[in-house]
Image 1 (spheres, helix red, strand yellow):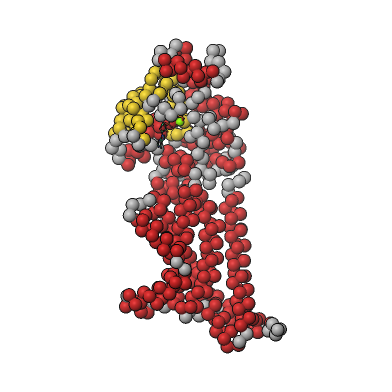
Image 2 (cartoon, each protein chain N blue to C red; image 1 turned 120 degrees about the vertical axis):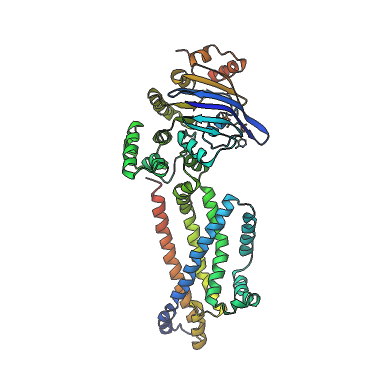
Amino acid sequence: MIVVEGLIKHFQDSAVLSGIDLQIQQGEIIVVIGPSGTGKSTLLRCLNFLERPDAGRIRIGNLDVDAARPRKADILALRRATAFVFQNYALFANKTALENIIEGLIVVNRWPKAKAQARGREILERIGLADKADAYPASLSGGQQQRVGIGRAMAAQAEVILFDEPTSSLDPEWVEEVLGLMKQLAEERQTMLVVTHEMAFARDVADRVIFMEGGRIVEQGPPSELFSAPRDPRTRDFLRKVLANQAPLES
Amino acid sequence: MNVLDVDYMLGLVPVLLSYLPLTLEMAGAGMVLALILACLLAVVRVLAIPGLNALTLLFISFFRGTPLLVQLFLFYYGLPQLFSALTEINGITATILGLTLHFSAYMAESIRAAIVGVDRSQTEAALSIGMTNGQLMRRIVLPQATRIAVPTLMNYFIDMIKATSLAFTLGVTELMGATQKEAAGSFLYFEAFITVAVIYWGIVELLAWLQRRLEARFNEAYQR
Ligand SMILES: Nc1ncnc2c1ncn2[C@@H]1O[C@H](COP(=O)(O)OP(=O)(O)OP(=O)(O)O)[C@@H](O)[C@H]1O
Ligand SMILES: [Mg+2]
């Protein structure tokens, strides 16, 4: 289980996260939605310490980190317990697809090369890129690159995978294959925290949807409730705007 | 106009080539030392280490802002005056010192640019899977920065080889110094200097060819 308490983050003088409390059960799939500039990315980045929170507490399994006074070892441990999937893939340009996936196993977990490669090939199989093991990112399509990005996160065997708008940089033709892979992970009950504007994905896959605005969690609940009967006017407003630009959710 | 004394030139080639090793030794030593120093300076700049960063900027500004010849004279004639222990500083040492400091200032900036040029999101990705700063530098950033920096660094090496000819003003008999002596003995100035010019040119072309091969090898890895 993951517990976040009172997470606060300022950039210069402006509060970007104003006290986030969040509990995530093992195997839970959570989708975070909200307007631009609300702190969704910052929340994910704080959980991974890519951004340093000003205050708060993050507990993952046995790990208990005071975000204001983290020890170096805490930060590394927290990063190993969380994996990140980036909007722009952020693959290592000097490494092949296979090497991208197993880099962490070799460098961070210090697995022997043969063992890591065997695991890497299993993952390539699962993300449908077994034939691209030796391809460099530059030669892969956007969809393939993002699947490798997800494969890299899968290899980390983290408690939770954090997705920050994983399909927002993709040409429309590649969106489905990436969402498909994420659905597959969700079916395997991989714990996931996903920031996305893909409302259909949220409705079909999420156990819980969180609506954030102005650095706070405004409202949360199962997608069936949050989408059909949002309680807060800000949620209603946001959903109306977003759904106007997307295919209707009613199925 | 007299005809070119081709026989003299052909005879001169092996004589001059016997001084080539000294030229290459000075350039080689200067390059290795300059690379090491430049990497240190670049790291200080990239990490913006307080205090050191300002000193580094001053160092770079001075060694880029003054002629190499002035720097060589400063080391060879000037330093012994300040430090009596250095009265014995020889021309070769002073040349290597000058080349190192002068070129490290230029190289530091291109190495810094190459490091900064590696997409920042890859650094974040490396951190996100739990790599330390050292690991991500060694495995992700530096290999890519090297690829970006190699063409410029090779150009500096080529410049450095040509710059070793200034050592002759410090009394070192290297390729240029030897040519000067030969020419003064034979009075065949044009023949002597055109011969040494061709020798420098040949070395530079050889290196340029190497550089192209090296770049092709580096780039191969990124497009398949
Ligand atoms: N490194 C930074 N320095 C200063 N301000 C920042 C930084 N990163 C984010 N911000 C600011 O913090 C606020 C929240 O940003 P964040 O990226 O978390 O929003 P978001 O909800 O992910 O938005 P989007 O949907 O556009 O991705 C924004 O106002 C942004 O300008
Ligand atoms: Mg964002």
